[in-house]
Image (cartoon, rainbow, N blue to C red; front, top):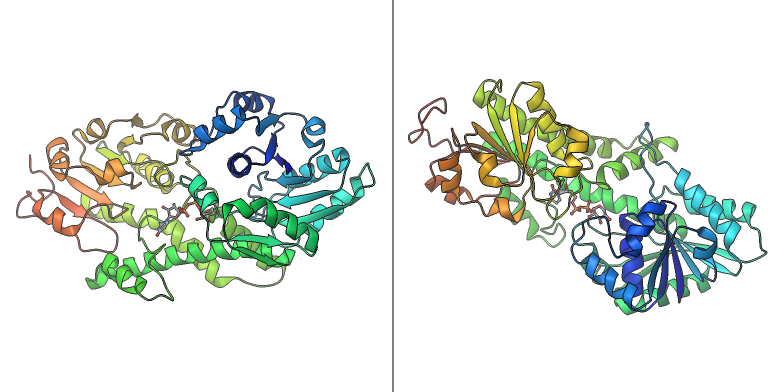
Length: 446
Ligand code: UDX
């Protein structure tokens, strides 16, 4: 099958690379000529485990190529995937400018019957709109069918998710087009769920909103656990044993970030509002999430009194491990708050520093060394549960820090292990471990 993919961002690139790997001939198109040059040389630009190797392998086998030109890129394509961004407008709604531009480019350049597949996350009704834009702008008299085929990839495990996802959703009113997309994906061996276009569009938003709800729910439970003496990890484990609930997405912490959950939950609230529905539940989910980093900050402020002139270590900047993505990362709000209150912040991250600097500027020190970050710190915040952070020897915290006071926003350490260490420890939804008998009150144990 000859496939073109418009947009070489995260979704487009991973989709293109994986489709080429199962044997299709794929050309990925982007308007950014500089980017296209780098992609042609085998540089994926984004950080995603396994992507570079797969990309190089398929470029070598001549199954995967890149183009900065829609006319040549779309020539002969039987199926065209739209995978451009749908950034957030000021009011929270999804911006469809790139989608419309892609639809217009398709209409002007296709010369044969084509199935257009939308991978981008778009509000209900957008595929219908795409069809109209293409129909109005068509240059050659060919048949175009539109299919909604949302992606459910997680950053950091996108390749694995593509090859072993839970389902492939195909939304269209055209049986032949549904068959073509099913055939394209058949080598993945993943169950296919076929439905109408509007439902497919909604499945994507509803799935992300539901997962976000699970996270905010457990974070609220965590906040209550802190007040009642229960342990949220035990509560989540006990809840997860119920098959109807399941154990996943019940890790309490600083809340969700990234390029999908914050944007998609806002867009769904907006979409509901456009149809005179006040989506109160989801609004609360968003509010709870926005407050989580501040919850830990307040706990620290209460303990330390103030942050003025104190060296504060922050472990982890990326919104989650195995990515350099800083979009909507909880670290941003937390660090901004610390800087505002006069702290000297040193932040560790193995790969997100470059992206973090663009958002947070030069008002803090960045480090790729955990030891250097901890050295002489008066308190440490754990923000991203990188393996390296989870593997820190608790004795190191005690030895390196001026006062070993830890605010763990990701529950990286078992309370049993902390109890035997000489540190003061505050986590999410679990008892504080002050070890005050070991530490002089006020943190001045040294
Ligand atoms: C998500 C969806 O999982 C994916 O299906 C969709 O296509 C895109 O959005 P992603 O944003 O890459 O993927 O990250 P994910 O691993 O789902 O985590 C999202 C956020 O939730 C992270 O900030 C993570 O730290 C947080 N999270 C996740 C929790 O706080 N607790 C959990 O139990 C799980």
